[in-house]
Amino acid sequence: MADRKKLVAGNWKMNGLRSDGLTLATELARRVRAATGAEQLSCDLLICPPATLLGPVHDAIVGSGIHLGGQDCHPAPKGAFTGDISAEMLADAGCRFVILGHSERRQGHGESDALVREKIGAARRAGLVPIVCVGETLAQRQAREAAAVVVAQLAGSLPERAAGRELIVAYEPVWAIGTGLSASLDDIVAMHAVIRRHLPTEAHILYGGSVNPANAGAILALGDVDGALVGGASLAADSFWAIASSCG
Ligand code: PGA
Image 1 (cartoon, rainbow, N blue to C red):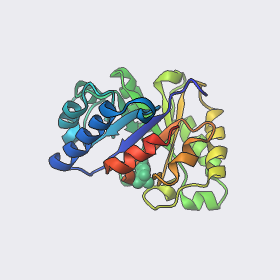
Image 2 (image 1 turned 90 degrees about the vertical axis):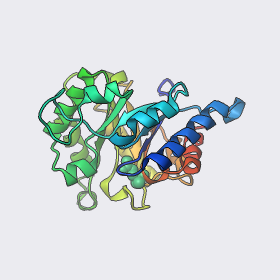
Image 3 (image 1 turned 60 degrees about the vertical axis):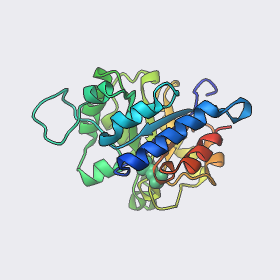
């Protein structure tokens, strides 16, 4: 576990105009560059802005060590797919990662495990590391189906041969996203252990769902939690930096 450097990823979702997005990215890059000694982050940082800001954010963070990622991609490399963006385009814009199968895509856009699997293939074709999101709804948790749902999502969406270094899974209980209700530490430990059994040792498992500066330290200290996928709290430099600093 110790050799899996933690990753703290900011998913900006559909937030950020050029001015505030650039201010945020520039400030994070400034903090990374200015940090010395104990202030230096022990984790990797990733920003996933909306597609319109990939270029400007790339320019703001280039050389800082902060990684850039997309929030989704289409399975095809190019073509007549109005409104979509390919993994190759993300790579071309400077991305190294792409979030796939987020519950907001699964629910709002009807994305199936099979489609997520195709998108993972596309990400790999383009040399991107996929961050594959899985997680149960509140009804599924209350019905004690959480583990079965997550295992089924993994089985349906992960490629047969999952090379560890090139794969990240984010456990994001749907009911914890944007609600202020993060999963309990016990539930996170239990689900990450379930997920770990289906992944190679080198693969990272992130937790996501209402991670904030107050709960990040305890969550990131858990075994098999290799980082966090952060939504709301990634939209301000202070809170995102505080979460990243909690990696210890
Ligand atoms: P949240 O979102 O941190 O705002 O709960 C997390 C996510 O959707 O990745």
